[in-house]
Length: 123
Image 1 (tube, rainbow, N blue to C red):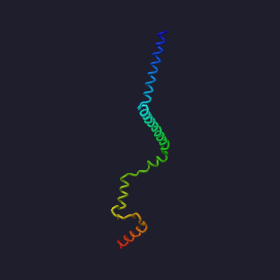
Image 2 (cartoon, helix red, strand yellow; image 1 turned 135 degrees about the vertical axis):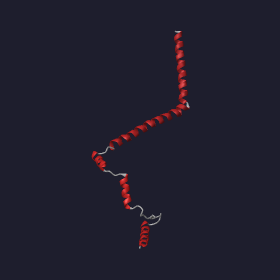
Image 3 (cartoon, rainbow, N blue to C red; image 1 turned 120 degrees about the horizontal axis):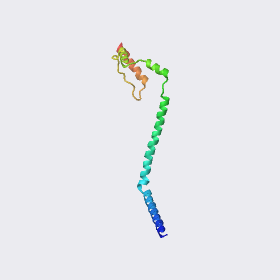
Image 4 (cartoon, rainbow, N blue to C red; image 1 turned 90 degrees about the horizontal axis):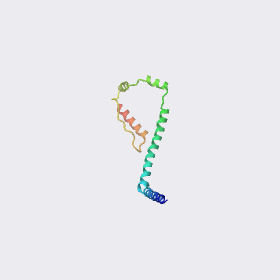
């Protein structure tokens, strides 16, 4: 029996030392500040990923185009060159710089004055 008592005493001593080490670790700055910070970072990252995924899933569902509208869009053949030709036909070189109203000015009065000045120039 003396061997057994000794084994029990060793186990109790080992448990006591282990508990002391755990208490020290638990009270350390790492456990107090570092672990919660890491949990917030990792948890926040995972949470944001889930919310972002919901956003993209909803966008996929609502982003589908009606086939009839798709055909209509294919028939529309507007190119950059055709728009450029339209703008050239309107005569972009015949323009006049007109000042807009400043703060505190009545825009209608300013427009009347500008129209009068243009009318007098043309006569």
